[in-house]
Amino acid sequence: MRILIIEDENKTAAYLKKGLSENGYVVDTAFDGSSGLLLAETNEYDLLILDIMLPGRDGWSILSEIRRRGKQTPVLFLTAKDSVQDRVKGLELGADDYLVKPFAFSELLARVRTVLRRGPVRQPDVIRIDDLEVDLPGHRATRRGNRLELTSKEFSLLALLTRRSGEVLSRTLIADQVWGMNFDSDTNVVDVAVRRLRSKVDDPFEKKLIKTIRGVGYTIDDE
Ligand code: CA
Image (cartoon, rainbow, N blue to C red; front, side, top):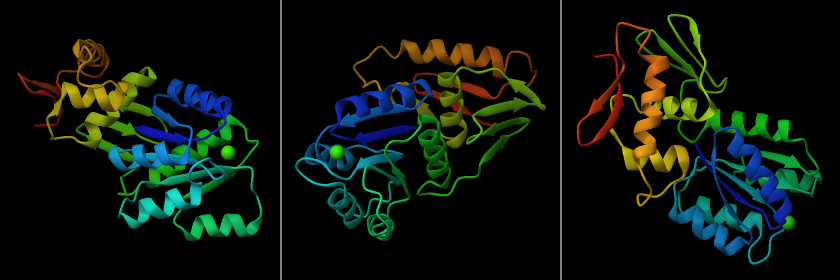
């Protein structure tokens, strides 16, 4: 899951980036409205976290511009403004949620998960592939009812594979979506991570779900 934060207070942006990264999200940051809008338009994000008062272009205008161009990326507003009018305006413009500063990180994380669960395209909360169950909002996975102990990156990788099960995902795409690395980076990290994930998801079970497609990448299915 990839998130863009547009926030001109460096400290807040850094704090959010750190916290969200630790929870398995890939996070980009922009510190002014114009560069934020550019990033939002050129990359695919699962969520935008938008401050309202920004140099260059305010959060309202970023949101309306994105919606005008047909992008349904969910938006969470983060702002010191807390009047009812501001809140109503944000929701009318198509914001998905609204959080008033100062806030606890745990509160933000809960909102982020809720908004992502709703998503632009509705996804089931729990994805089942054979006897594997991946609970996306709950960040947990089980096989035959047994909890799999996964790190946050391993969970992100499993979530990506299961959300797109049946599709063959290239190492480049996986590296981008799970680690935020571009294609020039060493994609060996993907092979290493898949091996670790397999040791937990597949090795203890007779039926193997994660498949290597030689020369292409990885897929998960119950064929
Ligand atoms: Ca601001």
